[in-house]
Image 1: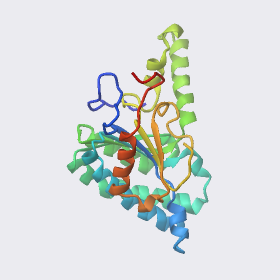
Image 2: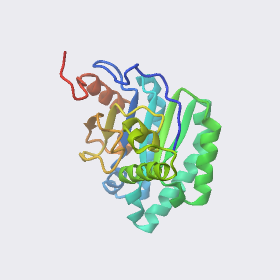
Image 3: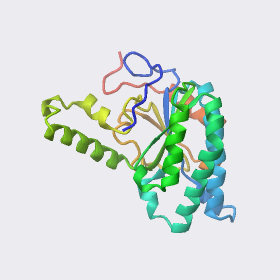
Length: 251
C-alpha cells in the first residue's frame, strides 16, 4: 500500500463549483489508433504518448492540480501481444531513467500503484528508486498506475483487513469506509475530483473503481498522443461548470 501525505485540500475533502480539481485521474487511451491512422506501428503511438505525458505533467500545477494519476498499464494489458508488451516495458525503462531527475528538479513527487511483482525486477527497482528520490517533493504528486486493476486493488484491501481480523489486531466492527480506504493502494491520497478519458471511449476500464465513486467524468474524442495542456485546460473548465452534490441536494 502506498502511504502519501496529501497536499492541501478543503476541510471536507470536496471541491466546490468554480474551483479547480485538486486530483485529476486520466485514462490515457488511443495510442494504438493514433499510430494505425498514420500507418505506423503501435509502438510509435506509445512513444508519442510519452511526450503527451510530459506536457500534461508540466501543465498540471499551473491548472491548480496537486495530484495527477495516470493509467499507464492495466492488469489486463498483459494479454496484449508479447511484442507490444515488451515495447511498453522498454519505454517505461527509458522514462524512469531519463525523466526522474527532471521531475525531481521540478518538485514532482513520483508514486506508483499496481502489482509490482508482475513487472520486470529492474523496472521495479527503478520505480522504488524514483519514489525514494522524490519523496519530499510537493509541487505535484504524480501517480502512475502500472499493472493496475481496480478490482484487484479492492480484493487486496479486503484480504489485508481479513488478515488483520484473523490476527486479532482488528475488530470487524471497526471496518468502515475510512478503514477500507486506508487499505487501498491509494491510501493517503485525496479521491479524484475529475476523471478524464481520451479517445472517445466512455468507460472506466477497471480504473480506481472505489476512489472514483464521486469523481466528475469527462470523455474527450482526442487521442492521447494529441492531448495537451489546452485539452487539459478545457477539461478543467468543464469540471468547474459542474455542481457537485455528493448525494445531497443543492442548498
